Length: 276
Image (cartoon, rainbow, N blue to C red; front, side, top):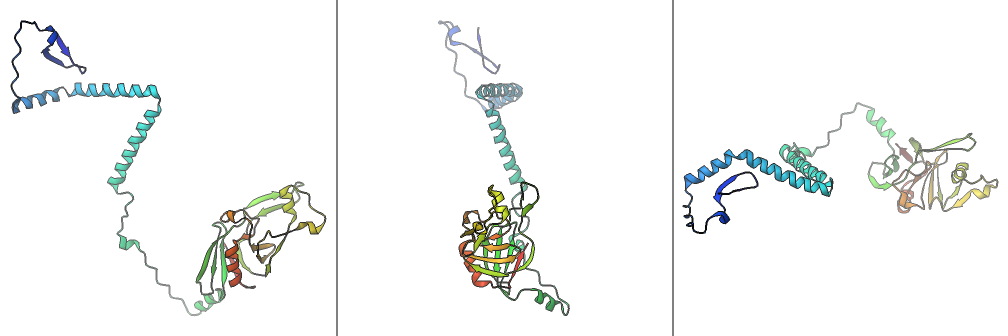
């Protein structure tokens, strides 16, 4: 009698319909499964777990080999999916991302000021400006306009020095386009300033240095106002407000039009400018 063999190697001892003689009587119907027979069936499956494991491995290798023929990107996709699942499991099980402190303890209260000795308070007040002043963060391209008592008027996005270096073709002169650090005072204010192009501006553009001094004038390049800090450094407007927030200047502080108007309304000659 021929026996039928399953794909996983299990012998199902049951005659094939084609091999059964025509004169043979039909097989009696099997009785309904009892709880004891169900337990025996489960025990048989457990005894053959290695065969089931081998069948699962065979199916996995078959599917994986079929996908490999389509490209190795499938392996990378599966590895990425398992990695994401593993990271999610670690994230949820370890509590990463959840604060270890309760919400009420996360709000830190300001510390009380330290007591000052006699005379120190007067020295500190003497160093603080009693008028409006400007504070410039040259690396963050930010400028704060504050009143004498420290009240913030406005935080502004500006542009500071790029830090670039330019050397003259003959090597005699070198320019470093950095915004200087320190405490400065506003030495002068000018409406509708005219930019007098220095030598480095022509060298940077690859043009010859003009002999006529009038050829150096370029009106409108510095905006509506310019505040002089000395040594050629200015706080001025710009035609290129889209570049604000970047270190693109040759050492000056560029400010937007509306912010510059607010600065002119609050700052006077002699007021301080802190650049850090």
